[in-house]
Image (cartoon, rainbow, N blue to C red; front, side, top):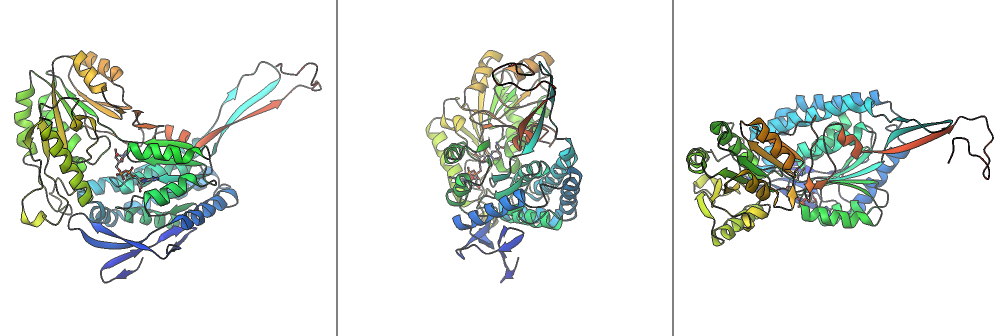
Amino acid sequence: MAVTAGIKEYQLLIDGQFVPAASGETFETLNPTTNEVIGRVARAGKEDVDRAVRAARRAFDDGPWGRMTPNERARRLRRVAEIMRERQEELARLETLNCGKIIVESRMDVASAANCFEYYANLAGQIWGETIPMNGPLLDYTVREPYGVCGQIIPWNFPILMAAWKLAPALAAGNTVVLKPASYTPITALLLGQICLEADIPEGVVNVLPGPGNEVGAAICEHPMVDKIAFTGETETGRQILRLSAGTIKKVSLELGGKSPNIVFPDANLEEAVNGSLFAIFSNAGQRCTARTRLFLHESIHDRFMDDFLAKAGKIRIGDPLDDSTQMGPLVSRRQCERVLSFVERARSEGAELRLGGKRPEKADLQRGNFVEPTIFDLVRNDMSIAREEVFGPVLSVIPFRDEEEVVALANDTIYGLAATIWTSDVKRAHRLAARIRAGNISINYPVVNPPEAPFGGFKQSGIGRELSRHALDLYTQVKNVVVGLSEEVFDWYGRWPGGR
Ligand code: NAD
């Protein structure tokens, strides 16, 4: 990766080599804090997709990767984790420079990404099938085999972590990968590709192609040599991915959007609920699929809760994300910033009561970046657009409720079903609600949790499949059934079949 006049040049990773795009085209990648150019990145196109997919195909069909023992694969995945830890500060800084995430969160993301590789290294030797009792002299067993070439398409809000969530289980299971990072945030995924090479993962096993979604992403979904697509991004893009993958009946897993409820009952520890709810909406400047964007407050505690919540939200330190004391950085792009502000305008025109923020901060040193203040709307109705559509920014809708029945109905009244949080000290109520809320990830008296050990994914239009945990291995392996005839009797097509029919 060369440096010209302070701007780094990044190339595509294809077949173990960093190469320019076939077209020679590049695009600029920016620092959202200043909107200055920090890198010039090779812009992949269809031809590059074809080159990368063919390399991944060869690496799967003929390369050493498929023949390695699980232990040999695991050793390399562990090495990836080690290198990430050794380079944590560098990777975290680049993540912050490219996506605007505060440095404290970037460090956590790099650490979590390393943990993810280690977790799947430990599972590489634990991918096994079943022996199935048969009604006759037959031995029947299943094995789980990798799909082959996996196309993986990821968003910009957790660039290195999403890359790890995708790569680690796919590689542990023995697949090869063509990974497409989001156009806004290509840098750390390319570095992770380089780290995979350093860790002795063979050429062609990991290919990384930054480029526009509707061209590069679409070409990956349509390529006949790709066996499986794993996508994280908006629900609308997920629909397109399904359509594009239909032509070749690809196996598809999707992690999509959310509009997750956060429910506070009067018997909750309110201080804990206030602090947890702040984190659940304003961490990563609200740009998380699991952001708890609808805060349901029981009417009896609404005012008390809001006094404390607004006071603390008003003190969130917005600023340079490289500064350790900053709590909220900029949004990823100017476009995202404008999109978020247009949601704010719509919410106001629909009658929601703006209690905090709703604009860009006025401080002079923040004008070049894509900053939006923490924004809180109160007395929102669940049928307003601000409570229905994914804003993907630091914007919260507060919705008062009267009783459990009402809040369950409101929480479930959404096309999404990614996550939910319940704050209560009544253990019966907590589990009753956990059962009734239609979402893939429920947290009780805890804001957000996605460690590699726990499955992650959405009900309804929030996705298909579960990432992380042992479940992710199901996304990257397919079941093969093997039946063995044990009888000495000769098989007779028109007569008796040993083992019965
Ligand atoms: P996006 O859907 O715009 O883009 C995601 C990726 O898809 C990018 O790499 C993009 O280039 C690519 N893409 C775009 N159009 C494509 C097409 N037609 N064919 C193939 N690929 C295409 O999403 P985003 O704006 O980058 O990220 C934010 C979204 O991601 C939010 O909706 C958020 O909820 C979601 N998200 C979900 C999870 C989850 O696990 N459920 C996690 C993080 C983010």
